[in-house]
Image (cartoon, rainbow, N blue to C red; front, side, top):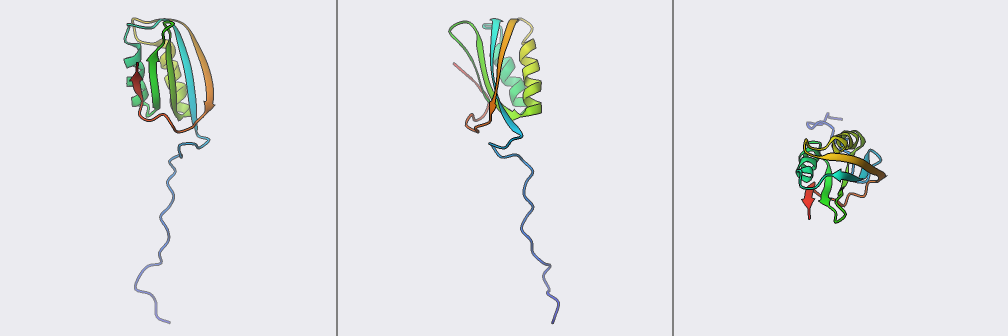
Length: 114
């Protein structure tokens, strides 16, 4: 039998990038209370979330709080939460309510809403 002129073919290796609903990804829902509107909080959150590769949104609420919903790696979300607890320089944060949820993959690029 003659050796093949072509090397043996094998399928490409699978990517190690987690899928949108993989266990490595999580969802964070945070409500930030205090003097957090009119101080650049939404743009602060957006800038850091995009830098960390997160998906989701930040928005002002009618009760004066700021709401954030984000998905990404657990490490990135933990770092993001630390930043949210600090806020921009002009913010005065009184409390942060946090809920951890399973990732759903439905948020899209991080942005400011409302």
